[in-house]
Length: 139
View 1 (cartoon, one colour):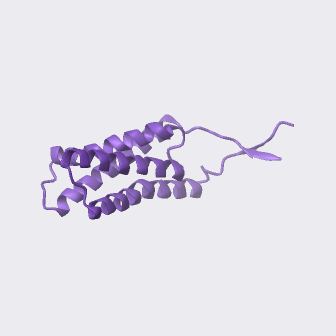
View 2 (cartoon, helix red, strand yellow):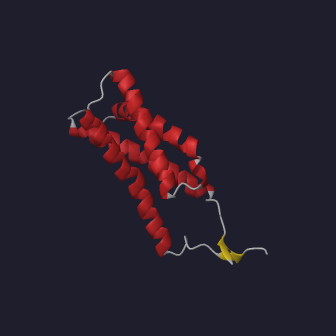
View 3 (cartoon, rainbow, N blue to C red):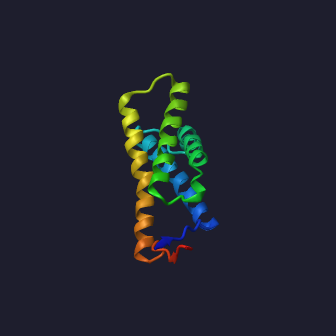
């Protein structure tokens, strides 16, 4: 009988994954501000992104995303943290949360946070990095 060896990602993979997640949230905030004819200045983008960045951090901590940041279930949990915490904080400060905004946030962030993971996994598979060696199970 064979088993797949479990290997943890390197520090470079974790750093790139965290950076990609942060970039995804910043892109979301910048596009959102731009679509509402708001300035896409650094401070404005950061203030818009901050609740979702805090949610992103919460998601990373809850699922310990650094252990397998490219796995899609990890991405789903990170996305859920960004959406739930981000919307909760935004509602707490703005005292309103239109349903259309909730839907745009959820859909935009799922595309951005899971999209880059799907592409990364496809690239890894095409390069043979995701196959992983198999070793016999000790009997």
